[in-house]
Image 1 (cartoon, rainbow, N blue to C red):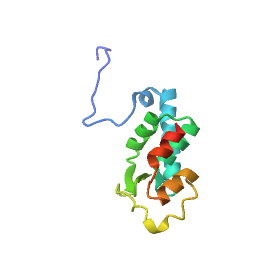
Image 2 (image 1 turned 45 degrees about the vertical axis):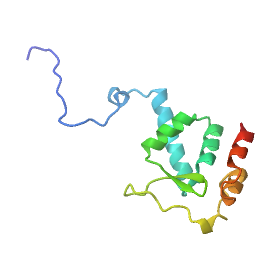
Image 3 (image 1 turned 180 degrees about the vertical axis):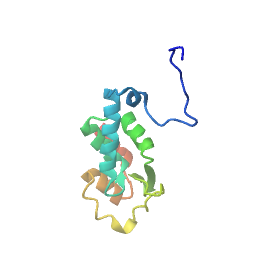
Image 4 (image 1 turned 120 degrees about the vertical axis):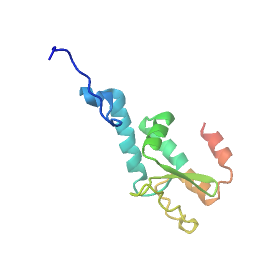
Length: 134
């Protein structure tokens, strides 16, 4: 009753960002939310080649480190298919969705044509293809 503020701590961890607590909407927070939603939408139809995700992110103006933070937050699973790596969202139970089946390589229309050729050819020349894009 002295009129001084009192701090009362929660018994467990608090899952709220300081910006949310203070009602602030920082640019960094909006960017984080945007990249998370973007990555979810990119992976919503199933596994996508990681090189294709990097290419799409670059076109969308997202840095590699920003994409990787979103990947970690979403618990995106990386799976090797041949010599290529694909990213996929975990299922509702937090478990990874089934891997891409080798017999379904004709349904890769959503990937960049160079990446489709790399995947269909088992990743052969992958280093050459990457070097030519830099």
